[in-house]
Image (cartoon, rainbow, N blue to C red; front, side):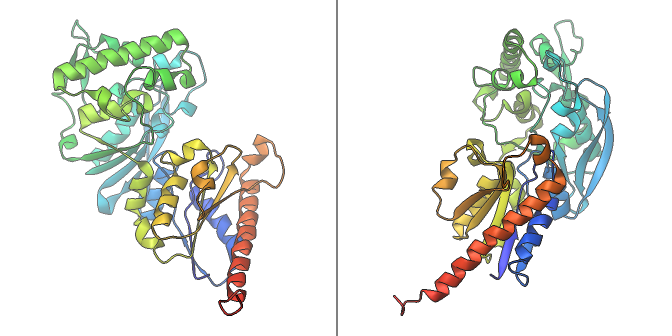
Length: 391
């Protein structure tokens, strides 16, 4: 074995992509001590994207105090890549669900304002390219809070600015963009998401995601009505049918708000991360790729890290090992792919608390990496033994 690429997603709430890759490397080295190992931090636009890209591109982390989802101050972090004048921002850092206590109805009032503050800080640094990952949001305000932090004003019929949250969307009758930050005009904004939901309706932002954020059925309907009203305003004022944009419903409609008011492009997070780190060029001469994520299920094939890695590997016919904490659910794409093998890192049933213990995870993923590499090692030996002459 000459070259192995380790490109694994973080295990949420447990270990970063880099820590997992380090543990896997230790296991691999026990089988192939002399092989060349290339570790590439990976993410799909959600948690871990800032960590992965700042490491891969030689950037730095910037900490800002911003308004959290319910306006309490929080310390948020984004990635700054000075040589590219690029900022990598995770919405969850400023406007994420874990930042507030769970309470029914919170989503009616939560704001994405803090995300806008992170964008504004990056623009003040001279940023020309923003990659915004929008997973894990606590909001359903269609990005209005974010836009307010960037200088947009959303007015009701009395000409007054509306309050916070998705409950106020239906009050908007006018948008004033005369005070927006001028740097927005020269900055490319790409929004990383694997969600394809429309802005409103039975598969829209409110109906699908608001219950996870604490909305009851009556509140879901009110939020959906607000999104419909806002979409109509966008249609009337800008001539844009935001409902027809796949992914506009991502992050409580923030995806649609970015498209409508920031001229943003919705993209696949994993594809963008791969492009930033030149992933396909790096793997061309690899003999094996080791990847993984916390849970492998049907969603894995909808633009997650493993899906993106496997697609690239297929192009070069490189075998892939997938390591995960949970693979109890079926994934036909992985199971039917002759190049891909998937393994759980758990040798026996464990509690969720133990499964999320970093030292346990690092130990187990290293052990399983070692065992799976032994299988490949024995496979190579069998190829040498079963020669055409012997057959």
